[in-house]
Length: 605
Ligand code: AGP
Image 1: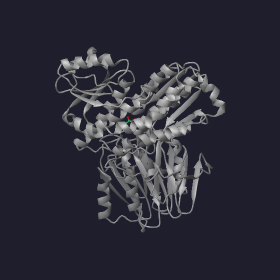
Image 2: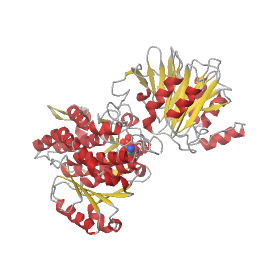
Image 3: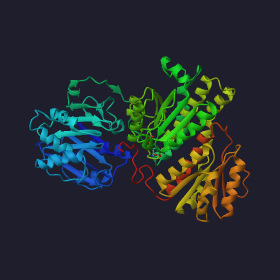
Image 4: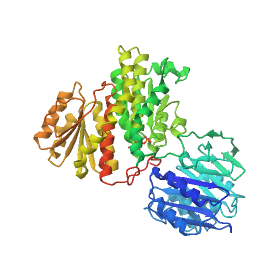
C-alpha cells in the first residue's frame, strides 16, 4: 500500500527520493509524487498517475532541486488515482505532507477546516493533515510542535512526513498504526515506510513506535512520545533487509519461488537443534502454559489464512488440539467464545495487515490470555503486540504474490504441530516425522525441476477465462492457495473446491472450456479423487493432475510429483502450483511482481 520516503542530504535529494520510491514500488500503488524545499525556500512538488518511471521523467525534465524532501506512492482509498489525489498535499504553499494510513474522522475535521476558510483540492482523507498543520502553526513555535498538537485530534492510522518551507533544515515525521522507520548514515538521514526504501549507505535505523513524533535534521534527531523525549534504540540493518535485487531472475516472484529450498533449510536450522524442536525459542515461563494448551484459534488473511487452514488439520491430527481458523476481517467484527486454555495465533507475512492486527486487538478484548505471532518481519507491529513470536525467516518477500513466505508459514506450523504432539507425548512416530521434516529442502528442490514440464503443459491454460482447482484434506487448502495465486497474477477467474463438493453444485460449470486442476497425492483418499476426476471427464472437462501416482490413464495431463511423506506433501505441492500461476501470467505478459489493484501489505481496512 502507500509508501513514504523522506530525507535530508547534502546534495540534490530528488534523485534519492525517486530511487526510494522505486524500491517501494513492490508495495503496490497507482500514483506517486514528491515535494522538495528549493534553495529560495519555496516548496516545489511533482505528481504523476501510473508508474514511478513517469514521475521520474517529470522530475528529470523539470528543475526539482533541494536538499530536503518528501515522497510517496499512493494506493487509492479515498478518491480515484489522479494527480490531484496523489501526495504530497500542500497548504498555502507553506507546508507539505505525505501520509500512509486512514484518517477515520477526516470528514468532521474537513468540515471544521472548511468552516474556517480552508480550501481542499483533493478527495483524500490525508489533505486534512496539512491544513491542520497550517492551522496549528498559528499558535505553535515550530512544525515539530504543530504536528504534536494535531495528532491527538486524529482517529485512525498514520505514518506521515511533513516539511515547512520556512525551516528547510527540518523534517517532521509521526506514526500511529502504520510503520515508519528512520534510516541513518554519516551524512544522510531518511524516513521511510520500509527499510527496503533506504539506499546501501544507510546501515542503521530506528523503528518509531505508535504516537512517536520525530524532528529530523542533519545533526539532530528528537523523538517525542506524548510530550516526553524518548531515546529509541538504534538497530543495524541486515543485508537481506535492504537492497533486494532480482539477481539473474526477471521477476522477484520467480526468484522467490526458487529460494524456497534455502528458506526452508534456514527455518529448520533456526528451530530444530540437537536439543529438539523449539528448544530455546519459548521463554521458560511460557513453556508450561504452551504444553497445557487445549485449544488454538488462528486468524489471518489471504495466503496466510490458507496456511492456517492446513495448520488446523495438523494440530488436530498430530497434537489432538482443537483448532478454529478465521478470516481476520470477519473475526474482528463478531462475538465469539474464548475456549478454555486457548492460544491465539495471528499469522501474517508482513505483520502489518490491518485486519489481522485488529483481530488480535479484538481477541485481547475478548479475553484471550496468550497470543503468538507467526511472522516474516521481526520489526512488525504484529510481533510487537503479541506475547510470543515465531519468525518465518523466509527473507524479504518482494513479489505481491506470496510464495516462499507461504511455504515457510506451513513449515513453522508443521514444526509447531509436532512440538505440541511431543509435549503431549502423542508421537509414536517422532523419528519418522523428524526425518520427513529434514527431507523438505531436497524435496522442494526436486519439485522445482518440474518447471520446464509445467511451462510446456500449462500453455493452453493462458487462454482460459475460468479455472477450477480441486483437492481433498490439506490439498483442498493448497487448491485454494493455487487458485489465489492464479487469480492474483494471471487475472484468470479461479475457484477452489473440496473435491467431494463438486457434485453439490460446481459440476454444473464443467464443459470443455473449463480447466480443472486436480491436486491428488497418492494417499488414502486417492481413490475418492479419482472418482471426482471421472465425473469431470465424463462431462468433457479438461483435467490437469498433479500427483505422485500414475494411475490416471484418463487424464488430459499429468504432472508427476516425486513421492514424499504425506506429512510434508502440502508444502511440496505448493511449488508446482506457484510455477503454474507464474508461467501462465508470463505468457499473458502481465505485471507479475506488481499485479493490478493489489498491495503487498494491506495496511488499511
Ligand atoms: C498472497 O499472495 C497475497 N498477496 C495476500 O493474500 C496476502 O497473503 C494477504 O494480504 C495477507 O498478508 P500478510 O500475510 O502480510 O498478512
